[in-house]
Length: 602
Image 1 (cartoon, helix red, strand yellow):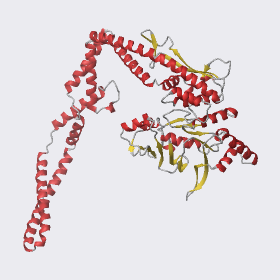
Image 2 (cartoon, helix red, strand yellow; image 1 turned 90 degrees about the horizontal axis):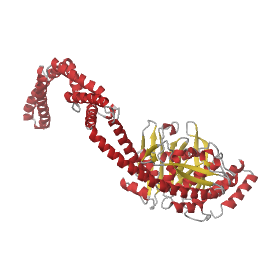
Image 3 (cartoon, helix red, strand yellow; image 1 turned 90 degrees about the vertical axis):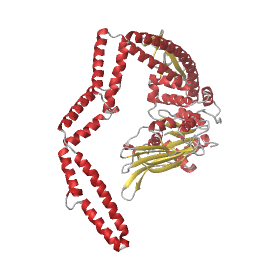
Image 4 (cartoon, helix red, strand yellow; image 1 turned 120 degrees about the vertical axis):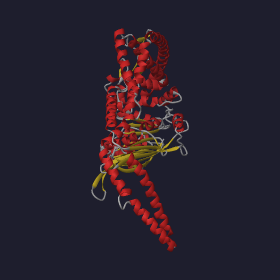
């Protein structure tokens, strides 16, 4: 549950902190007031991609933080935290995310830095956000299988099937390579053997190129190096006077002076240290200078060696990546050699490998066929439950004659066939959601639904039903129950559901049904809904108004977005505005009527 949300310098938001309650909350306001900015800031905190454009103009950093309560029944969230040694404080966590104008960002959960992927994964256990554009995913058939697998608890089984499918595809690819003609195989072997021989002969060593480049630079600049070394040597010990001789004279003089005035003893100690250090330095530097020698033959050898390594670096790189920057120069060459040697071994043992691959492919095909049949049966059963459950929910959302069906069909014959079963990467099934919105009409694809309002209600039903955790059947029954007083409208791990304008394309009695439904599931969950409809807003437990205003920041006037929790009188005026666009007596009377009728007991 989201208990507090703090936003700073995000889009038009200067600074705001919201203390949030459980139940059903609505966010309302004029068009353009910034309601979607509030949702956007929350989406940012949930792990959505973001760039520097979200930073408020004139600021260096945008920041969003939240205090969330993690329920004890949310096992996935608790296990995730435990695996990363992140401890909640009285079941509460502070989550922070920032992005700077430089593009750098930071994310913390309880002061533990995490990646954006980690943040999205964890927040997915706590929140489910439905944005204005999520309808599009519902219209894509490829997402229907994902929805059904999630509802039926088949995500792990589907992932396991996909791994076997991928392994089988790789084995078949290897088998196909083995059936290459002997001439092509021999030509390939010749190329690979030449490459291995060339790299082996070169005796490439890790780090060699950098070492040789440094040596080449030293030999190439020897004249300058020698000149500087001689100048340093002259100043240190060759010239008269030199640093060493001056230190010796100073030491001798201070020894005599200290014999007369003992207070000079500390200075004598320091000059002695200076002398001995100068003497050591002179000795070491003399050895360095005397060892300096110019070897033009060595320079030629180094340049030749570098030329060879550069050629190998350009010529050979791992086939798996084709990206040299993933390896050091020498590692890339040696990785290519290792790949070439492995391929030589495979090509040289064609018959043996062919037999092994044939047996492995046969075993994988049988395993895949068995998994596909089990998965299909479970999907068919889950599809029936999902269709029945959504049909019930749609009835409570003002579509009493609607029939929803999650159809699970065998894949078309043109797909790949394994063990006499047509399969794809995720099973032997094509899943498609169908609906008949009115009595007597045949089932049709969702994409052929003309009404955006109907599609909004289908998405609302799917979103809530997919949040079912411990028992999907219980979630369906509770969500569709006519008992508005139920405190367990939807059984779900995600404690907070966010709907951004779920009311798109609806009005009248349908809007009343949607408002009633949201209020009902708000009995057991925390619901946030951005809406323009008064008939939905009057059902809310908490009413937040979003508005833009112009402020003077000391230098200029700026537009900012703010949010306020409305009291009963302010809510009355906001409902009147939503109904009629003004706060006249007629609008206020209508608002009073709706609030009295639909807010009783809140």
